[in-house]
Length: 176
Image (cartoon, rainbow, N blue to C red; front, side, top):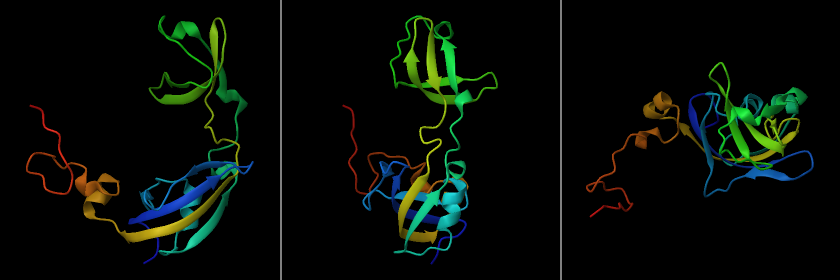
């Protein structure tokens, strides 16, 4: 069975960036599961996986425009401290979330803390980087109806109630 739309896929991968540093990886014991064709991965990465079968490996290189985009200097912004509560404390490299006027949330990292303002980088941490994935396909199967409805692999357990009579191999903590 090969990778195609609406199949549940398990992958093991290593992601390296321009300077050869490993930016992310996983293991066979903790694979990445996703539903193919549902936009859960970078589009060009997902496209490169199509047609692969269990046991196959692939070396995939994505240019910045196909990964997390080019670095945008305009996404490095100074934000007045007055926009935050008086007891807010920030340090360099702290993650920060800002709600925009349109209701969307932007995530960034504090790059500098000044007397009256923060300098925040809202670029993705991998923006401007060439991404190199070394991937192995561990499992390919048809997604269940529940997985397709929920959009998550393993969705059959998404709404499972865990109680004292639950019997599928894990312990429950009960107050008392």
